[in-house]
Image (cartoon, rainbow, N blue to C red):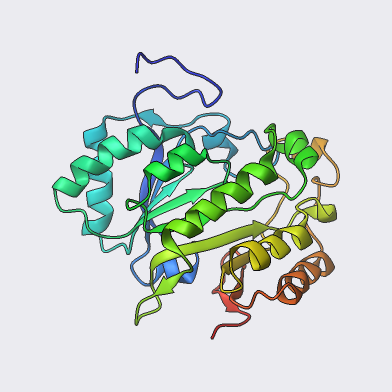
Length: 274
């Protein structure tokens, strides 16, 4: 509260890079009106390949007041967005809640999306029970040593598993309205990394066996070398088609069926939906 800064390098005020309607999210989030994204600056991870490194690592952004943050939430609602999408919120939850209270008192009513790396504290997540409508966690790694090397965080798989379990306990499987727009639930992202570094088989097995076979999973093929990735082979290259095909196969054979792949610049290619 006195402005001191730790690993995340954010003080008492919300730190925002940009906001506005976004049409690159999954179809249930973006719909026709877009997802009302608010990109929070800095991060509680240090991924060497981050595709948003200007925001997360170089800290491009501005401190705003809670009232200004509330105005952003209300603005995306007024512009017809289907939700308020809090991107990289884990290290700014108190600041977000202060702005959210103001926005709610002024008529904010669209669903709230918590768009996270899953490196979240359980106590913090429990405070969000009844506040967050849609959790959008990314399950990045199945191996703790890989997470430490490439994202500088300890015990990532253990933390992420506990976090996703808590998210699912709160909101359950993803629920869509009559127009196919998400209103509540969990939608998991998994970015396929070169050389099998993400541990896709173990990730999908966990989701199917310990969360729900009805879990919505976006298996993403959009990895490209960014930031410091060229210093860390095999992260210096894109994934191959065979690597992506194998990742989808692993998801399917685990028993998950609500799968889709997200290709940059194209529409969602649904693999299965009941």
